[in-house]
Image (cartoon, rainbow, N blue to C red; front, side, top):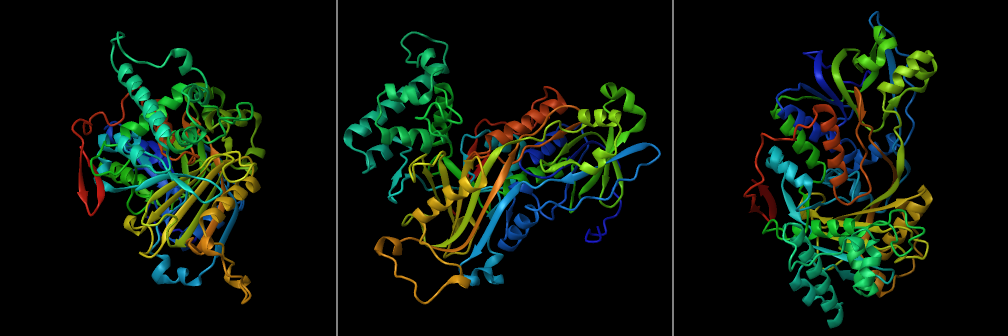
Length: 567
């Protein structure tokens, strides 16, 4: 550990809670626990930056992180026990695989360019204006540390290159030239039904109210849409452009996640209530200036104000178990603390680990049966993968849609090729969000997948539809064929990264828990739910940030086009 900075020993050495990793769920938990006034919190991260797997990085730092975290790290040396504690070594497992990075214009890696990028590790990701994450920011006061801008437009695309607008208001529906008069009337009728149902659900009166039948609410959402009836184009916009469904809902037997009507209505409600929540937000979606890494940093800053202690570049190397508790592990828990990479031992009542941390295999092989039984209780029982998500990043010169800088594009299942099993989401962000130089845009791609090859093939198909293909500089030749007019109009790719991330479920309960990895969703709702569950497990039924700012009378201010949410 000679590369570690010469940190002085930590003081104090005992805390109520130690958290390792600063991905989105962990800072929310740190801020909530610190704000409760009853918990002392130590928050560690082995990285030199905040955000862990939810960070925004420069191109060199992103490249380094992906390469170093796609390889199995060397096994740590066997831990040394102390007279009072049993030491169990910890290992880091890789969350990333099949990393490919290509440079098509070497000037982008010049110092004047490369450090001007703030590129997200787990994009595409946005916030709905009515997201629970926004509510938590307002309640905690974390909104004081981050500013947002609107996503200008949303589209549903296909293999022809056509991008159809996702209408987000009555006016937008009637302005949309891609919809016929009958389609506009059908879509308006459907939205009116949903809004009437939502209004009826919020009142106790039953007379004269319009509600969707309970039988329909329990049926597949795609069947409910078919009963409306709605044409295929409108169904596709609702399912994949608004409800943000991943899998092909028309193929009921093979669908990986068939959405029920009640869940679909809840997603539409989120979309509808997001529009107009903040008057200077153009639509339902917003994105943090300087990248999504600003979100975990905002909660970390709030936690620090409330007394949480932060130490970056500080891995933990071992768990410390109470030797005396091996025979009564169920009653005592057995966990005592952790050993830092500096060798210092720090103690706590509870521990929350980053999703990539697990127990070292060498340590497991040297333990007695009783000690293994102790570890099965202490360590997250199954840091199990929930599947994979293929991610892609392209730096482009130009825009995928003329005169639009920040935009979301969704390719529904089978819209690009017959074997496409899941929706592909693409988010374009421009320099107004301080994520890239002025003449460029950043494109984020993602799709859930069963294996690496399937996921990367899907993303490459979307890239070829949106972007002019290029050959890496070392493979270019003078005999390149001129592109046709359609290809020439596409933006040019300057740099590209492709990789596959394992989606890891967090484990809750006991003295030691594990936070979840970034998921395949467009927003943060499941990660926020993960933080809430952890908090309830640690603190009981105590409400997060109950003493903080009220959500009543939320307002916003405009600053250079930004959406600044304030309570």
